[in-house]
Amino acid sequence: MIMDSADRKFIKLALVDAVRRGVDLSSEKFENEFLQIDDPETILNYVILLNRRCPKAEPYIMEDPSITFRYAKEIIKDRWPEAEPIIAKDPCAWYLYTRFLGVIGRDVDVWRIESWV
Image 1: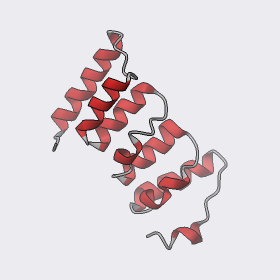
Image 2: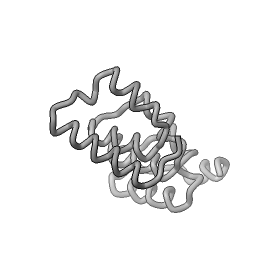
Image 3: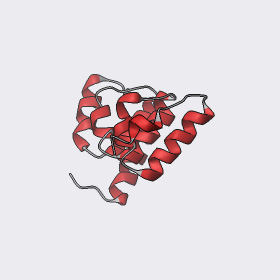
């Protein structure tokens, strides 16, 4: 499903409204339905609302390097070695990721990463 910014905004607003109404976004049924959207940014917004790691969503999130970086920063809040090859594909996302790691006092082997790109 191809989504434009209006679709994304609508889904984000619908999720926020569902949270306000007390809908259980973490239920298995809702999660499975939501993952059918197949849009990394929208799925990231869903996971941010859950405010917890969502392993089922990670393959979708890892389709986009910048979304992968945001997931690492906002949800995992630490180094995410499995995703580093994906993040490294986007120079801007990689720069932000390494800066984030520096802020939280973590290191990454830059020489090893050259083989990923």
